[in-house]
Length: 219
Image 1 (cartoon, helix red, strand yellow):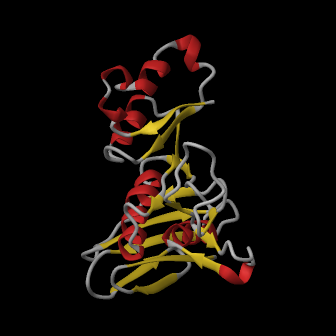
Image 2 (cartoon, helix red, strand yellow):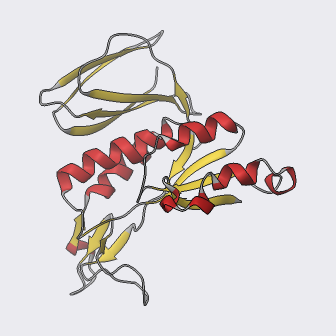
């Protein structure tokens, strides 16, 4: 079981403050709880630092974020969500990321009364014929694609040493099959060059400005 499943800022409601921690510190309740789940509609992902520090044995998952008419710009959502949701969660011992919603049509459907009617799916399909030829891929599609393309279930994040490149953020993983996977984000205005070195191989890549990239290789 995962508890909370809501925003980093607890919606500024005093009674919700540190809700997962309150559950974890109750031995009887904690025995039934695997960890906590989070959304990003308020507050900062840095809240997860305190959650993990207090209870490192409890899992952390990101379970909902949406794009829609109120916030959508492909360029900014692609970069900001990859940094804050994906790298932000996985870099804080998060076990995984789930977004809302993976597919909707161009009318925001399917939905139910009272639900979001202005949300976009990671993939949008045309309501005129619901054909795979009428698909638009939004920013969340590429966020998910870059991670799922190279990360395998059970991947372990690795520590790194060396000099950095301004504007470049990356996370390096070892997959259970022995392959290496890297997620990269370049928020700078120029190409970022990076070279990854293991005991057996050197792998170089160039990340264009304002771009995300994923790399996988096996020694």
